[in-house]
Amino acid sequence: MKKRILLLSMPNYTVGFYKGMRVPSLGLSSLSGNLDAAYVEKVVIADLLMVQHNLRNYIHKVLKEFQPHIVGMTCMSFQYETAVQIAKIVKQFKKEIIIVFGGYHPTLAYELISKSKEKQYIDFLIRGEGEIAFERLIQALSGNDDLTEILNLSYKAKGYFVHNPRQPILDLENIKLPDRSSRITKHYSIFGKKADVVEASRGCTMSCDFCCMPQMYGRTFRKYPVERVIEDIKRASHNGAKAIFFIDDNIFVNPAHLEELCEQIIKNGLNHIDYTIQASVAGVARDPKLIELMARAGFKIAFLGIENIKKANVEFLSKDRRVLDQTSYAIELLRKNNLIVVGGFILGNPEDTQETLWDHCEFAKQNRIDVPLFMLLTPFLNTEVREKIINKGLLTNPDDFCFYDLSHANIRTQYLSSEDLNFLKNNMYGKINDLRSLKHNLVKFHYPFYLLSLIINELPKSAMNNLRRFLYSDYEYENYKAGRIREIKRMGRWLLDKKHVIQNQLQY
Image (cartoon, rainbow, N blue to C red; front, side):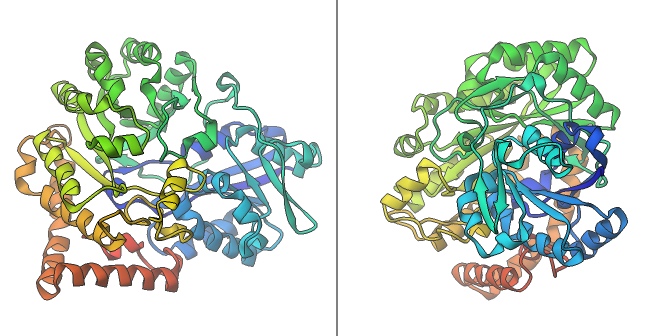
């Protein structure tokens, strides 16, 4: 019998990203695009990120209308608890529905999951890249493959999980194009423009200790043929996309490939689309002519992994110290070519003090970073930085993964508590996002209407939070908000019994 398959991404998000970028799950579209039609009746993809109201009702509605045989869910660590709650809803709806978990957290934490109480709601885990393993699982559930032979798969035998070996990394030339037609959620956007996601490569060869990417791909880099990427862009454009996010981990690892991609984008008349990338400082600083070419090809936004500006912290994160001398130049180069700089900082390293945190805020101001993101060092499972943090006795939250979202402190430093880090990070956003920062901001140049609407929407929230700060001291307000987060999580566990996500209720 052919299978009806429902694929779900989770509704949880990190606050800073959600305001400007709401994009679909490329991973789920890739799973759908690589299924064998001989075994599949229909696939439906629901990005629950786009369902921020009445989530429980929405899930029931989709289950009733579609009546799936299999529900697959992808989740990051901070989304895992939500995925478990949704799995419970699915099993309560119909216990025969098969639940498959995949993505980063199941890859990082499969041993913990296999020993947990919630394993009763999960039938299969897929670790690492899922296109081949998921397709073979569907065949096995149709009686045409052997569960014990599927690499990357964890399955149950007599109530206990059995973990098959990991597969070698996939040959990207064998990966079919993603299937966007299966999506039932809409209205994805980047700074107000209809958006989609494309992938030009997978992996990164850098040695950063905080990154969990090596658990997915190892420290490898593979590129798709440029012709395949161009075809995918065309399909996304035909689907209505005016903006595209290249989800590549580090697209600059192979500059020649990126250069060829830019040239083909221009040649095929696809430079009317606004492109967003993730970039390393070293990659940007290496070749000014490549940045000029990218600008001509339509690249508008670069998420720049600055990470830190302090030598000791860069060494702790196992970053190349030479990037410290290149950071300001890389920012200047991007801005010179009218690319919006989204600067990502990782704060909360062992030697961080209040002064070093504020130094990063000042650096962002002086270098005119358009959108600074102050993220807190997060001790993801099986990363080298987690072991370092544990060895230094600085881990304060070892296992409540709901807070592993880059926005909440799960560690302390030698000089600052977790509460200090949360408080200072929030204060830094308050200081840097003022009207004076708009003078040189390139967002208003490329996306004026989006910026205006954002300012208008934020004014009531700012007024309410200023009132709270008047009524409470800063520290009292921070403790109040932290208490509200714990209360909401324990009562509703992320959306399932609430109209809004926690971040919407506690926006600052």
